[in-house]
Length: 50
Image (tube, rainbow, N blue to C red; front, side):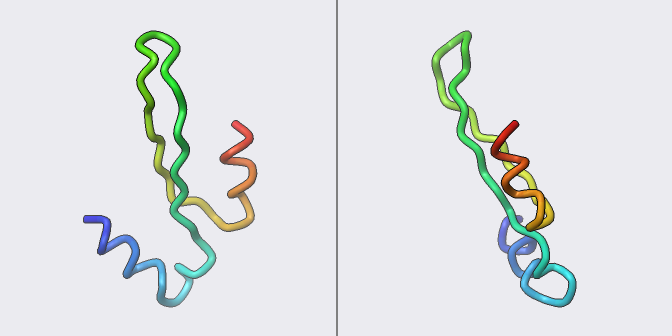
């Protein structure tokens, strides 16, 4: 499934988007969690500030 997303983002309007992955530590279990989103390149820094 990930290959389709990446292939779609490289053509046309998809160049203005980026797939970002943020790693956070769970306060309950201490395990790491990953949050993935496809966001506009202008909002990448905002995603990591949250």
